[in-house]
Length: 344
Image (cartoon, rainbow, N blue to C red):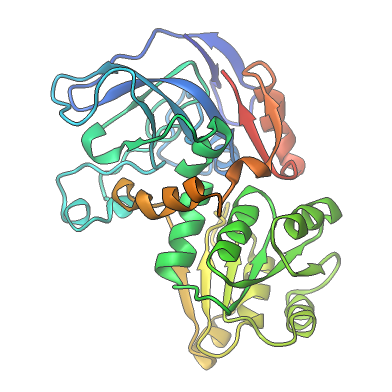
């Protein structure tokens, strides 16, 4: 099969001819229909994730059809169209048993713990626990984004922060994850403030549901926080950081109302310094979101089927495998506005 592969961290990947993957007894092989280009893939390529072994094939957001089924798989058959959470549970631990496979200590992640979906085929392990059926009517551009950015944002807002209709959410960073959060918040009936330094990203945020826009260019975290409160008319009840930067995280914490809830989705290259004093004095909740278990997808899929969520509208670029290495390198300078989809 053809795949994007890198031999060492931060060297330009190549298009390699690799052996076709073989389904493990508990897993499947999926022919990739579409896959996403995500900031997490850049972190893997940059060497920020110690689960990545070299050589490596990135990619963790995908949709496709099952082309091989392991001997122990009972719930899935050849030809089914599926996606998967980027975190796959082991199916045997207490966390998987309680429905929280996204924090499984023995988790697997395509594109991190094993070869990923920037390829013509990819293996998904523990398939009976980790696969999600996808209707043929759902576009590939929508389906492949459900494995990471939409699932992570949905769980962060719906299950972790319990964002309610009528509340105000401030989203810091309007790339793929941030725009997903904005769409989800609007579908949940919340009011959204979008914060970014890119006029193009803010325009996309406005198009997809943000009512208030804040350009944070050149501002300190305290100044950003003050501007969010001024522009919104009051301190938000919930904030979400989608970049993985200490300054934006702290701006989010500083603008929260007392008893506010902060959702951290952006991954950091190193340990950040946080405004812990504010967390203590305002009794803030600091909440992580690390994806969503396959069993929790029905509520998210219902929003997509109904048209209340249209992830495909966030796709601003579709590229080939051959164009992917340069697109990955270009992320050193920031993310492309909207979502980028790869069609192997």
